[in-house]
Length: 339
Image 1 (spheres, rainbow, N blue to C red):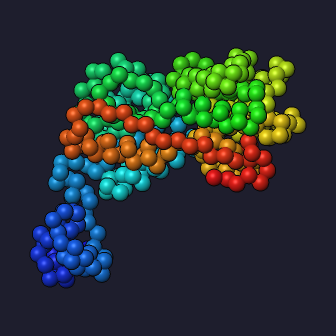
Image 2: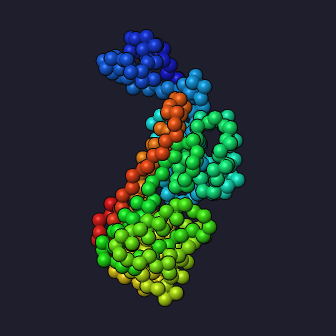
Image 3: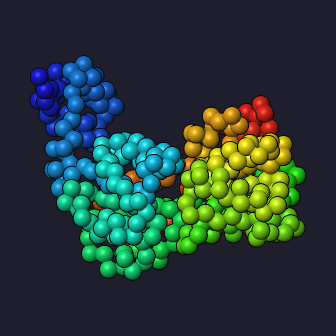
């Protein structure tokens, strides 16, 4: 039998309005009254009707999250962070997969699901500014990722240049002098360009050459792309003493090739990835990786949507999520503590 507000009110000996104020977290309720009502809620097992609550506000209680690669562990972990953050505000997340295709990103951004969602969080790959400039849909839109758009939408990103410099600085600090970069995307990719830029800047700051012969472009950012790129560098007769990979999947693919060629990680070649996905923490050699604060990205994205729904603020905002370097065996050697 479903427990109602009236049942809770009778059990607590208070008015239905008082119970409603507690359930809706109304601030002007005394601590004693809040505790009394909460005790009755817990004892009766009352669960608020979230659908009705959202409908009273003219909302659906659903936020859409559109990602380019649901099979990529980074995006899977990011989705989990968004879902957790939304749940804290009694919102459900609808996942959409764009495949990084411009036409699908346009379709999503132009509001083809507008009737069933209150807001959209979109991580675009190929979307251009002109695709969004004339957007007429009034569902709040929040952008994720490193594509730089001069548009009136909240945008959440990490500083890729600074993150890349952190990774390369770590390698240089370990005495590595020939650092390769694997994952410079063929065709346009602002995140890849920014990470290559950070690689170049940190090498220059250390007085080391940024050797273009040690930059390997890829068509994608999967394990096989990293393996193929690492093989090309080695087959060209180059032997870097370190590799900075675009992401963890590329790094893991590169390490597989190094192992197959009889090269030891990190004794012969140290490796750093990017994204700090779970897979990198459980290989035969655990992976040092740039770790973006995925929980903060998810929280900021959801809070930005809710702020827009609440009518504030008027001006678009850009948020920079933190990052750190998780140092593990692929640079520090066997037995290094995983963090």
